[in-house]
Length: 211
Image 1 (cartoon, rainbow, N blue to C red):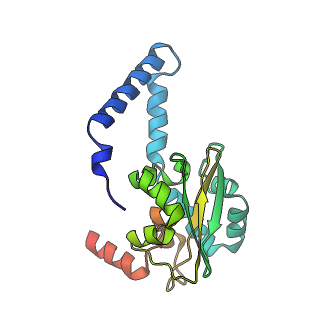
Image 2: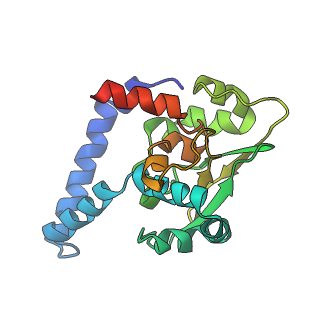
């Protein structure tokens, strides 16, 4: 996807930054919240990352019963692993040999923040939100994801009350892997549906590069 950096920086961002600071200071001044409460909330938000969703996916890959519960009630499945969803209705949809799923929020930027952390900039952009509905295969190709014509593409639209999480297919060649190692294959984008999980050889390359 196009980066659109010029739309995310500059005067417009400075305006909203100043506005946010002003609102925060006003709320503190009026006694609605305290500095400590804001700091606590920010720390909770910072602790949320795609690693939480990856834990759920890895557990589903190795535990068929957990997978059933996850597909039936994503919120309860998250809570089962100690992942707070703060009342969010989380719907988990599974990628299969015949169906590839991805999600979007066409109205704004509703996103499973409690599971995946902050959304990427492109997810909030108008280009992704409009194009992924009308030409999902073209959008996926721009992410380097080629989905065969015979595979059905389903685009799910998040709402203010409901969030989605994609359960990607388990990569081949991972038989006998531990949950922790499987979780390393699960990327944020694979849980949005715009990419596939890492292959074992890709994970090896990343680990060697980090040494």
